[in-house]
Amino acid sequence: MNFQKICILGLGYIGLPTASTFARHGLKVVGVDTNPRIIETLRSGNLHIHEPGLGTVLESALESGNLTVSTDPEEADAFLIAVPTPFYPDTHGEYDGRQYRRADMRAVISATEAIVPHLRQGNLVVLESTSPPRTTVDLVAPILERSGLIAGSDFFVCYSPERVLPGQILRELIENPRIVGGITPESAAAGRDLYATFVKGEILETDATTAEMVKLMENTTRDVNIAIANEFSRLAEKFGVDVWEAITLANRHPRINILNPGPGVGGHCISVDPWFLVEAAPELTSLIYQARQVNDAQPHFVLEKVRQALGSLKEKKIAALGLAYKPDVDDLRESPATEVVYLLQQEGAQVKVWEPFKPDADMQGIDMACTLDEAILDADALLLLVKHTEFLNLNPQELIGKTNARMAIDTVNGWDAKKWQKAGFQFARLGATKP
Ligand code: SAJ
Image 1 (cartoon, rainbow, N blue to C red):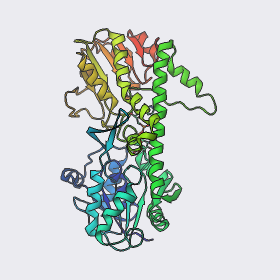
Image 2 (tube, protein in one colour):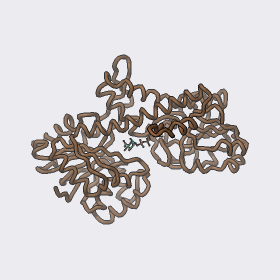
Image 3 (tube, rainbow, N blue to C red):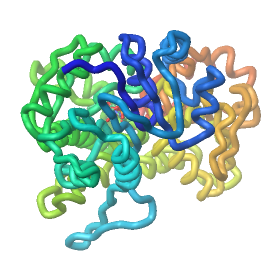
Image 4 (tube, rainbow, N blue to C red):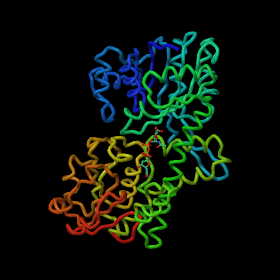
């Protein structure tokens, strides 16, 4: 199939890089977002998100005239939905005494509804948003059929999961293998033709529900693997073992690859997606549920670590380094670092946060510093929560003259204990009882 024009709904971390990449590869792209502020920002040549290299790609896409942005969809050969699928923050489902999160599919529903008036014979509609199993078949296709056209015969429908890693999105979009699941084989073939515009990795065709499962299985596997690493960090402290050394040694086994413990699992994907499987089949997902519990509880384990290091936290001043959900990104969504800060504050600590990727973040109840120096000046302890490159490069010899703190607590294995001790800091590390 030949595609000239595509309409991409949702201009966030996935939609915007995807729109820019299609445009750079010669397609006419209409990028749609319902938030007028995002459209204004993009039209004035600015970005509302941080992703390495995106500014340049976006600029050339806009300059070429191939990419335009709008609050409304319009007729096109293909439509691509890349809107958020969070869970509801306040309401839960319940199964056998276990509370689980429920997927909030409202953005997918309204994006799909917005396509209906523009849908024509022979069009392709692709859902990229991570979604519970059967969403494409049971939710998206029936809404599209309100157009009077029949899904799978009058128009094509696919599910193709985004699988790119924030921080590496532009490269991974092109190089990663791409799964395209069609509601019919013809739909999958149409999806393949669309992504072949720029994807250099293998394009693998399957059915839509398998493609949905693949995506959920990937992120759930990672969540479960991080949960076991986090549980190992707790066990290591109980037995006087350094978990980081133990993991390094275990990983010398040819078939073992243990991930890193840390303050918990954040972001908009790995801490969310496993719930889609739990909600869809709570009776079959006790391990997945348990992994979520372990990872969500990890900020409490960090709290205990800080308490061990500082004693009572009342009135203690803590400089928290990093608030993003993972290294070298500006995304604060579902960040375990934020959770740690709130827990410390509940115990009476005064926390000042330095987040170099978003110094002006407006987080309710969180005191953001404008500079690292401001955050550390009066502190009793420095608490490393995110392995940003900038933090790994800190020189404790220089810092000791700029802070009252004489205690450094590392939750991500980012600092060399010997260097910090030599500079005059006491040192504590998550997953270890000795520095
Ligand atoms: N984390 C650990 N220990 C580790 C690795 C990660 O605690 O060893 C934490 C991170 O600090 C972070 C969270 O897990 O808080 C998730 O980070 P991540 O780098 O594992 O993943 P995401 O959420 O940035 O991106 C994931 C990727 N999925 C997989 O690697 C299977 C990416 O390919 C997906 O496209 C993305 O989810 C998504 O959009 O679904």
